[in-house]
Image (tube, rainbow, N blue to C red; front, side, top):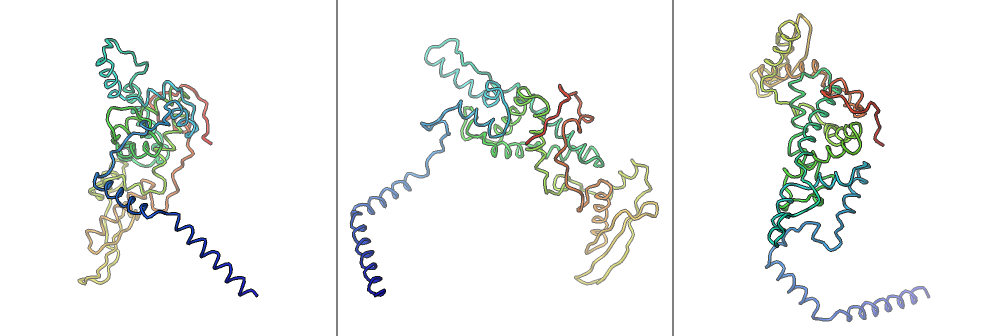
Length: 328
């Protein structure tokens, strides 16, 4: 009985499939193939800005941008942050071409905001690094700051914040220079809209946060570790570092390994291994620098809960308000 019911159901399913397949006309497949051939012959479509779509609403995009970041922006200042000089010049030429002698656009470009944002980003990032890494010399703090505020890094953060489709500029697609400068303008717009506290937290979370789970020595270029170690010890009044061979195995073989320790005033500062004594000395010097700078491989994670008041001693200008807000 069960077998008969199953066969009946299968016959019904087959008849349904046949009926459904007959609904597709024979001309559909050749037509789709022809359309695909023509599309491939024409080549890839040109990249178009998001504003070219019929459902584009710039005011809604500006409003949604601030809400996505959980920040309170002044709408006019934020719109100015997204408006580049090239867009103003382009619109001025368009209006002049139709006979308008004195065009009125009702918006200003973001050159002033970019200059202010550049200073704020550099100052806040450096103050955060000086507070989070107190034993790292200033010359290396500057190297890390330059890496975190480079054009490529700022453009990377800016693109992931969703600024690409909102930027008002004459050229398209948007390049890294526009993305980086727009992020600086946004930082300045946030400072004008919500104050120094929110601006610092924004820079801390989105720029300084790039250090999370990264080796600091990716941002440091130390060509001669032993010489750097000697200069550091001389500045701190320590005895000259002396490399000493601690042990070696496999001498004169392809698997040779040397262990070198560096001593200062008969105290072991660090050790290193290498296939030759030169390499071992270099690695030992790097290990000493890690120990002295507080950037060991097993170092505590960078404290990303630092607030503006914690870093205030390293700021060149005094914040407008002493109140500190915590980002949710």
